[in-house]
Image 1: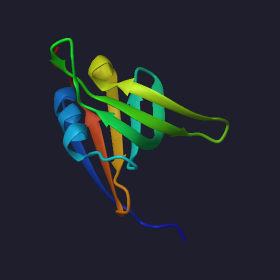
Image 2 (image 1 turned 90 degrees about the horizontal axis):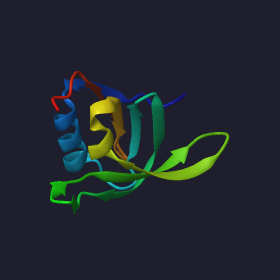
Image 3 (image 1 turned 135 degrees about the horizontal axis):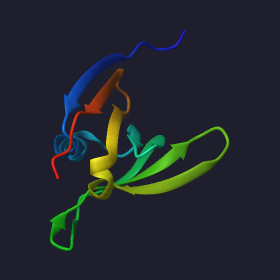
Image 4 (image 1 turned 90 degrees about the vertical axis):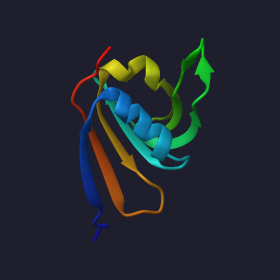
Amino acid sequence: MGEIMNTTEFEMDCDKAIEYIKENVQIYDVLELSYNRVFTPGEVLNIDTSEYNGKSGLKVVIHVSEDTFTSTVEVDLEEVKEELIEVIHIPQNKDEKIVIIIDKCDI
């Protein structure tokens, strides 16, 4: 039988979701991003919170876990935050799943 995960669901705006990722997601956690008709599930390989052009940034490198192909993508979450729909975070070595539903994004 598969493991049972404790699931916690939050509803927040895109800026709070970006802050959650910066503060809680670690390398090797699983992150599933749904944005602008794109679904990107996979293991986090790197998190970059550097400043770009005077603005705070958040880029994650994800090793995409798909049956048909294996790839690594970099997603600039500051660039796509207005298009974020849902973020699922599964911390490494924990039996928990955090689901974040994006309710709005004030631009």
